[in-house]
Amino acid sequence: MLRGQVALVTGASRGIGRQIALDLAAAGAKVAVNYQASAESAQSVIHEIVGLGGEAQAFQADVSKLKQAMDLAETILKEWGRLDILVNNAGITRDALLMRMQEEDWDQVLAVNLKGYFNCSKAVFRSMARSRQGRIINVTSVVGIRGNAGQVNYAAAKAGVIGLTKSLAKEAGGRNITVNAVAPGFIDTDMTRGLPEDISQEMVKTIPLARPGDVTDVAKLVVFLAGPGAAYITGQVIAVDGGMSM
Image (cartoon, rainbow, N blue to C red; front, side, top):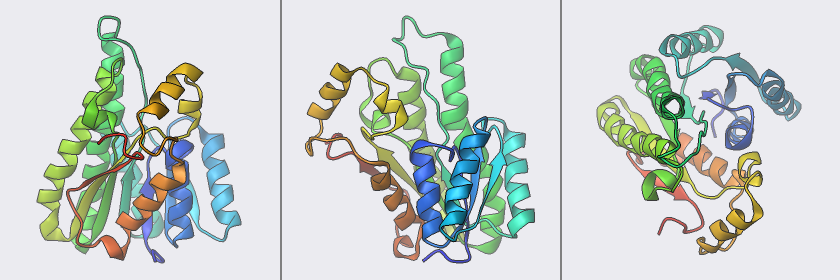
């Protein structure tokens, strides 16, 4: 489905990003696995992709820095000659109630979770516009839709991603570039497994399907949006949350 195409997945060394990288590779894409600090985890993703007959390379970059994002895209273009799919996924959390949240907690989350998406979109846009094709898929969150106590920074960033997605979709449509957002809900990852059991149980109670989602639920949607079947879908925010955001 994606054979011959090149995909960049930011924050792809673990969690949802890792599964997205694996599924894009399984669909035939060459995958640039971006990481900031987890080189060993990134190489594990590469090893798994290659073991399944795919092609992938790891690329280190702090996407919150525009120059590093621009250099990342340029390196991939030099290596593989094209860049068809961007999945903005890199993200961090620095949770605290507003009264206790430090300024650096706000700044760091906005820098990675929102500015990083701007940086990478800007870095790939010229190449996509030149080839008059491209897919930009932004991983936001249901928290950006409904909010969540203790996450004003994260919610603000993820809500900003939704605005970025819709605005860029309007700019990019004439160049045959689609821009969509995927909004995961309560997904079973290392991050959510670290939550106290009582909080996890309360979260599950808010989900009509009465269970956490799996990373594959998110990754399969990303692969669809990256493929030919989604050529007429743009500017959309699609929740993968078991009905949690209804």
